[in-house]
Length: 183
Image (tube, one colour):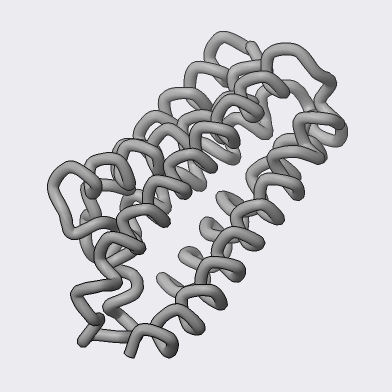
């Protein structure tokens, strides 16, 4: 049962823009906010480890969805992608200051014995990710504030994921060749 709830809540959170779009078109006012709020509460409760970095965006998401439901203000639902991007930016930027960088940590999962020469490169990549989160956050804010629900959904439900996927795949591919070249 726990696994099923994790899958459902995970799918709702990943598909948040689509859930908002279809929910606002197909459900009575406030229902989508309530469903998303419950999904976020369940997600928080189901976390095996309370990962501090993920608690803040989930708690803010709970606040946004609950406030949207209570105030009957559907527009608030559109700002959750902004919160996610700001949270990821904070996490990656913090890792730049405290080290090791987030990308170094991820790289070490596959390559535990990274050469010392890779550290400055991985630091630059972490900065690139920060730039992407700034761009995505600004676009999420812009689409929530100044565009239609359809444009917001296209950007936050598809384009942002494509940008993140392209950055992830491109960096991983480049890093693979870079490590072979510098071995």
